[in-house]
Length: 297
Image 1 (cartoon, rainbow, N blue to C red):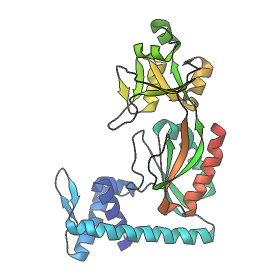
Image 2 (cartoon, rainbow, N blue to C red):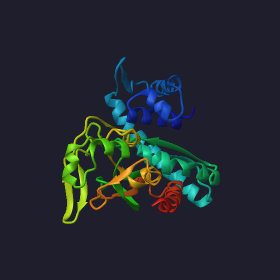
Image 3 (tube, rainbow, N blue to C red):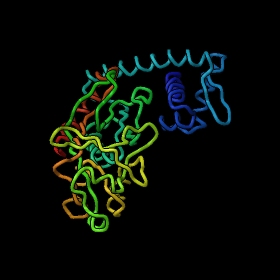
């Protein structure tokens, strides 16, 4: 493995916090990733990492070296992007992230046809309903539902994604159907929550403007698909994007509640770090995805 490839391993190990995670991100075994770090340490005659059985941290010289190594790799990536833009043949890896349900239903199906048209591109898709640090995790393109808070990132809106309150006919037969937002308080509301999650309430669109509802439920999860399944299993009321439950509503497995005061729509779009805006392969995938995804809304 070349010196530059060893630098990539070191950078990803620092960013992801472990040799195993850094190696996995680059499709290397922990043993190979560890050897790459040792090669760098032997090359310079210094220790770059402090290793214990529970924790890996950079030494003082390791932290300083990381800053320079990150700049070297960013410069190399920009140079490769420039050459690729002239050749017209995109090359390299695109790292994508998206919420679980959205990623499974809408993003994952886009990858095979894009890669068939661009055989020089590899795509790594990471799905999570938790917040992802796009810069630290070296994400090229993040698909996002909601209001982006980081002004350091470029936001490209794709569509408004309507949301609906849903429950199964069996749940409603047993517990009654709420006819006003205030009646949600007496129901088991299924919530998407995780550490530092912002969703501790629902916001409904009432006639006089947004109405915040402090709803509660007996259980919550950090996986949106689990919420949908709990609703299908008659466990309570869920607040889900319409695209996710459209077939369930059409087939009668779920019923839409309070259609006159629905949850406010979420913005659906993609975020890109500014330093990667000129990468043609990222721009090509973003253009392709936006064009195809608009058809789903």
